[in-house]
Length: 108
Length: 114
Image: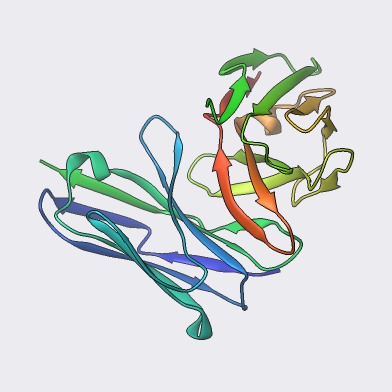
């Protein structure tokens, strides 16, 4: 099956810093989503981005489908950005496959 | 618009007990999913239902059964709970056609099996 690898596994930053999270996938995909899992466990949709670039406030995402990777950018980090960020892809049969996540800690 | 709701939020079972996790969505989505998340890991698909009346196995279906009761509701049953089923369970829903569109998740059920 398709493999999804996220890097780095852990990231610790000071408030105000910028960060880039990466998601590599092993085969072509129909769908790619980024999620934020907050410290209370809730999964929050960030982007639905099978290709191209999208921006939402301080967050933006780019997927280069031909090169099989996606990047999530977080600018001017806030403590509320802490949590785990997951990338998930759909290869076929309408099923999402999740990466292991990047744990982001923003210190005040 | 409540989105995806799950009950219960927390549950403790003894080995061998049974229980049903409930999920409902009010977004008129045709597809629904059950995932489990173990500590420090991503989500893994247990079962899914592409439309009312159909269900299919995901990556980790052993020890579980599901029922798509109607378009809104999708339940997950553990017939004889085992400690290996201690996990956080998430339900999700989406619109699907020739492809999968954006998936939306419920708040999760934290299950402990002793």
